[in-house]
Image 1 (cartoon, rainbow, N blue to C red):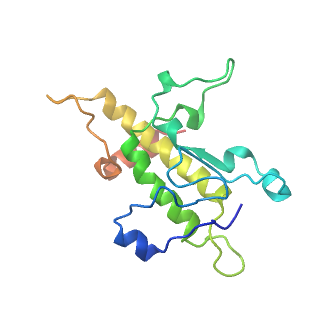
Image 2: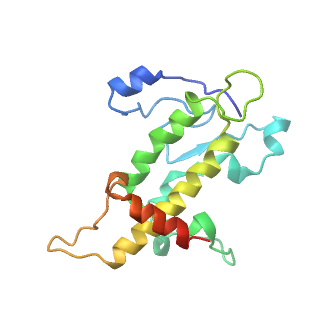
Length: 171
């Protein structure tokens, strides 16, 4: 649930222009390029008491339009399950998630500089995805122009005003 099997330094990430190798292990069972990162360790009691939702993130889920997703019959589709952002934004968030897990110390660590744990990072990334999803949905409604392309395709296209408005209008 803590240390990543393969590590890359911040200098290497910067040299590569934030291109992280897809075969880099982010957990004992997931590689960086995988559509789902799972930090659950079977047989490890400490990870078994943490809810599965806090120990895994399904990147492919967020880049698939909600109407195209298949949910079990009767499952309530709420919260992060309703979030949708373009694949390009998912690819921008993956390095942030990896760096948060591998390189940045946990701000709540009481002894020394320990890396952040997945059950701390994943809910934060999901919150960012939900926020970006709300902004993307608003822009999709306003979609204009001769190209028919969405007005935002990257996190860089999101303005500070958009973020403030989404935060003010979010539950």
